[in-house]
Length: 228
Ligand code: SF4
Image 1 (cartoon, rainbow, N blue to C red):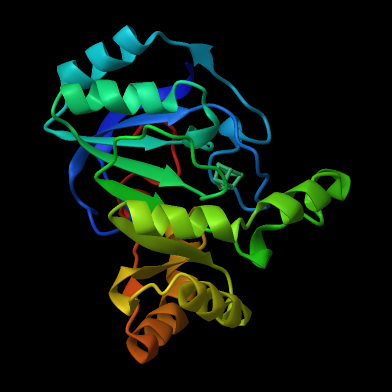
Image 2 (tube, rainbow, N blue to C red):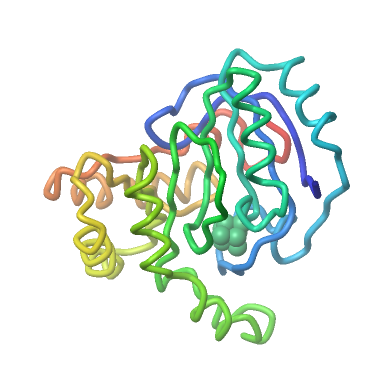
């Protein structure tokens, strides 16, 4: 499996924020978000092949019971389902962090952390805009999103950049019939200052709509560094 990095850290986002977890970050993504915070899995992919046995050995060595399969887009990895089944055999709690554009069969998962990509993610200005059309075509797959929400325990996590995002969020939450407590709004930003600058109005939207405010704990703890 092509892996960008494996590390043991604190889950920084979502309803399991604060839980010590092993992170398995796959390389490669089918999207190109303009603000991607792991460009080494998307815009400039860097990875190495690691056998499933090697991944499982790393998990067994470091874990306290929680594993996060993330990316890039982990669900485009051909061995994603097989890996999750191996993690299930190791009695791990498995979170999968996905943009929700593809759904392979045979996944074992305890928390599907679905982060649909909003219009704010489309890279019109980046790399000459050459990824914008494919990103726009792929970023939302309502059929896959509905199946993910129906088949798994889930959270719906939106990266928000401005108040203009709200109509799209409300439309998706309604289309998925997602109760408000499953909807998380997370300020976009890879520095404490950038997150803090959006925190005020994002929290007010959460209070008004009953959504959950989603801090970026790992940014507070470590900044935007790889492997922590
Ligand atoms: S889906 Fe995630 S990994 Fe892929 S480009 Fe967007 S932010 Fe980066």
